[in-house]
Image (cartoon, rainbow, N blue to C red; front, side, top):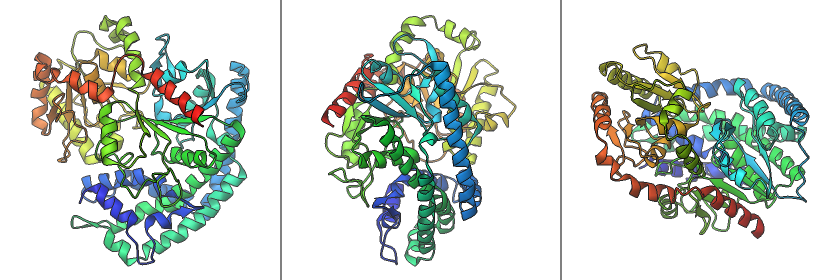
Length: 556
């Protein structure tokens, strides 16, 4: 039984009380299970990979439940909501003074609502000018393409970390488009909805905990995951699901006030984005999702059974509320979704990757790659091994194995290679896993650096299953897939012959040396792979995405 099959069985099978998890999480006619389905899949994956140990994120969630998952916690939440509401209002006032923004008017131009999560707010080159500035690197070029035809309102839910304050302020002051923190559309009604939902879901959780059939269904591959699942469910039912209900109300308030013609998102499996989809569907606002990562057989954001999705587009229980259209990078992804999932016919559209439209400006501007190296303060006398990391998706054990393998290989190479650790925007930017081992002193770069420029100046790209692997192939770079988990590769770069797979620590050094000398064995497969992966790298993907958005509002 695959992990997807196990999850499908768990959410669809009737329990002793006569209902399944989809029905038990139905609130006001919507199954809110789908707001957490993707998160739950990755929880199961990390639990299996760690041999049943409690993942570190689950331990952190336990503290969240202790703080917020009580009636007293809801009062603390109310105080935080009020403070964030005031903070959002304050930065709107600051932006009005500094940017002299005009009020959005949907009667003059269509307004496109853009949901931007914090990890996407990075340094990125302008599609039109090539100027490096901070923006939402996934949607930036599409917004530039439509800037004379529509107004844009960016928004995001606040993440409870210090960086969110800085990012919200930067967006308000420096984004070329209007931005309001989602929290400014919060109201006491949002909080009351959260309170009612908290009481509702807490009762349902108690029923699940006492259900004998649920206990039996928690067994997978001779392992009993009941205790660890219940601990995770505490987080979902006492914190996250009530919060999602609150977000639906907050997004409803935003839609009522702004009256957007369309919503553009890039993380349709996220908790807040799924809440937006629900609110938008109720108000007949079309939603477009653009692909933002690799789509593979393990990606629960796209792989659903015929039971999961309504062919007529219904969002009511038990169906998964999905976007009206999903724009993917290449025919490979469209064919994969059409074959393996149940998206309505015509809802998956191939546009290419808008991020790659910037490649033309970059290649023309930086033909001398030493210029970028000097700009990024990277030594010019050594080849670069670029490691695009993903510690937030991997177990502690696997992360430490990876660090040991990379550092051991470079130690044997006697400092002849510059190692750059490019931290994923969602992982700890202090780089704790890499700094525990003092044998190697890499260059650490975070989200302040444009990833495409970094790939462009590097000699070899190393990762496990990041989208950067396919982007490196498109930039004609050799790729190493480092997978020490003992499980099959998640992405197909090795199977397709465009990357070298390393599955044992001792093989990494030779893989690096071989690719530095000659990468012709994998280079010959790149053009075929890129054509299937990215449709066309012709500088016009943003235009295709823009035309798709315009067609969606005309039909509406």
